[in-house]
Length: 316
Image 1: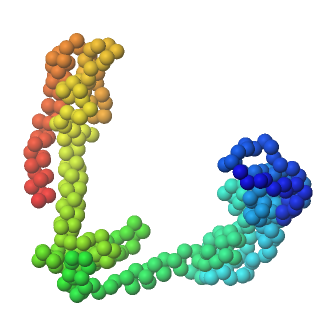
Image 2: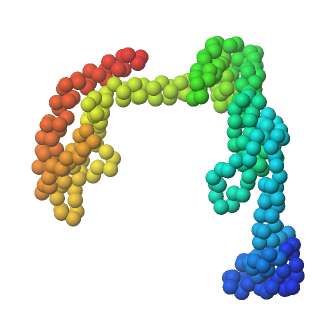
């Protein structure tokens, strides 16, 4: 264990070391703390390594003084990027440590925004947001690179196949470029340009697998939409027994506290209790009777099997 250097009486910034803080844990892996008095009068316990490295030089009063002095400086009329400062405004603090001054600024595009002094003077904020949008659009236009004749992994780009225009969440139009490629095996596929350039697609098999997964997802969503009737998913009524089921009968479970079989059935978001039974056969009969009462009428009304067949044919 290294010898502890006595710092008593030494000065570090605005701190004067009074004595070692013996209230802190001691040991090989424990840090050494010293009780220090700041020039402002505050007394705090500070780690020795923080004092020596200059990481902490005051109780925080120096930082508060600097921030307070900076906030007094009038920024009205000054320009920061596309922003012109109009006047100082009062804004609710995010927390107790937020001591920044806030200024109302007008952007060259006409929009007005409230910005903190720190963000203005450091250059982190140069516009109301229009500058970023304009740069993004400009970069997006420049991202269209001709891939014809290039070979990426096992795919040789033959040429541009099509351009799809899709709307983003912001309502803006975005062009997606698709390229026709020939794999080393001879198979031709159409690949999304972004995925191709980023190396996310290496051969024709990955393209086909991704398309299959996409079609399966879309098909499942289509089926769910078409078999939701009267607040009930018809496919749930014909579901197989869950893996967690130990009785072998759907809706029937064995309760050890009562030493009996419990039968239930779910329908339209509600669970109906059918009773406790001494043997599984009686519980099974109760469950089947309930299915006849709740499930059979709605399945027959909407011809569930016919709906599945029609949805599969239409999707294909």
